[in-house]
Length: 305
Image (cartoon, rainbow, N blue to C red; front, top):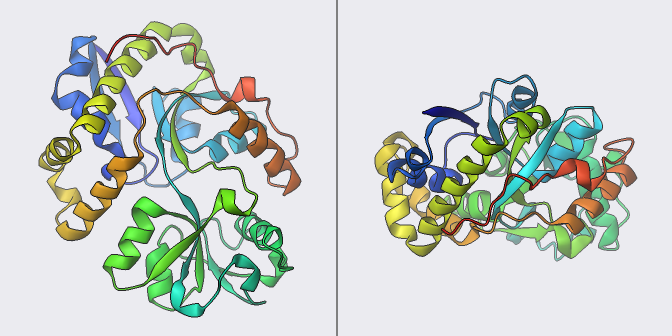
């Protein structure tokens, strides 16, 4: 039996349901794999750990692949399994119809604050909407990924990058009438996806293992899409602590997340092309890695679900 260590991109949550379905139903064991799930202390840990050989597969987002490869990290996206809506979260009672209405000094919560990248991204959306804010006109708020808390506590006016299936559901559950200005509506590549990544040297030396892992994962995705209720029940039974603090909220997040899974695993090359160019334009990276280096689908098979 081979062990595959899967690194999560964040704390354990309903985004990860299909992997536990595949594990509980024996799909990984069927292909000779024992799954080991690793939960990071920090959101960005996993890609570095892939490169050092501490993880076999990691969940990440396309923009982090661009950033890491631009710095020389030798990893590639091997499959996509979730597509959601993301962008700037804002409270609807502020009467801002588009990002162009945001005032100078608007308080923005974003991971990586007070660095410029998050403010540059939001300023780009503002300018694409017809406004003239620059990154320097935006006040950074340092609450990390706690977007809803930042707005609820009146530390921030808006938050980025928020996901519809998590932060919007969370905000509304807490009585905040929040909505999203979504990335593609304001000229930004639609990178609101979760992908699986592997180190390039592991792709060369362990291709059979990674193919078996993806085949079993596709079965878990297929089951999750076909019968989401049973899949979520299985996930929470296996991980009761994820639901303990607020069962109603986690049930709502899970219900929304179930609509976001995809089981064809294919990655969007045009999106990666546009994302690399956009990151260069905003100064997030100096040069964009070629898309053929960002993604490697050689370990995907056409095995039936």
